[in-house]
Image (cartoon, rainbow, N blue to C red):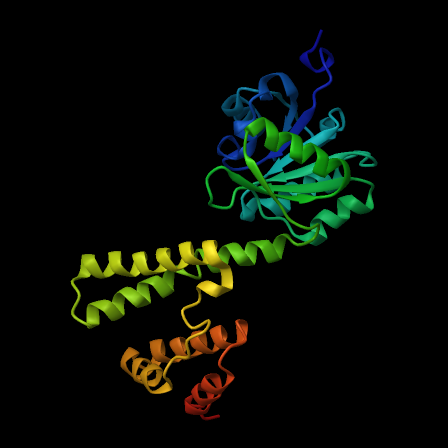
Length: 278
């Protein structure tokens, strides 16, 4: 009796890259719940199954029609080719579940399977230990929640179709923020603070601001009630230098606009901005 005929697996996997390091590799019951493992080749599928110590490699993606849910993982540069394998596979997607795990996938790509009757979901780690972003609908969302419970993680559920907006928030709080911290550290160094201490002080300032915001929200903003002096702000902007100063001005204006405070100060700062020539 073949292994394929011994049981009906809960999950099938189609993957590329470091599948074992994704959420798929952390599934506690994968040895008994994973069945067919597909990839761009049988050799790659075998390697993935060996790394996972679960499932069995298959030669074509059609074998993924056996389990009720398919788990997908691929790095960005391989996602399109792997999705192409699913597109041409003779799989009836009606009532089936497709869950994208720790990978980037467009709404258009998901819509192709949705149009064929599948429900889809995304499970993604986003840099905060113990938490996982969950987005989806229907049976796929239910299956994704089950996986989160099995992994003993705390879900952060986002609205269906809002994954890009969630990712934008994560980028803003991570990669987009890091240059600001470095900019603050550079200003401290230029003010005479030693290199190592400048980096620590800059990081501490940002951490303190984040903690206060988590505790008090918008009211934690230093100028929520107290109006800043425009002359002092202009002096700081000038001292920061042309590039950093322009950035500081824009961030200050963003604060006044976001928190809807001190419109007169914001107006003066806008008036003082240097408009680039055409």
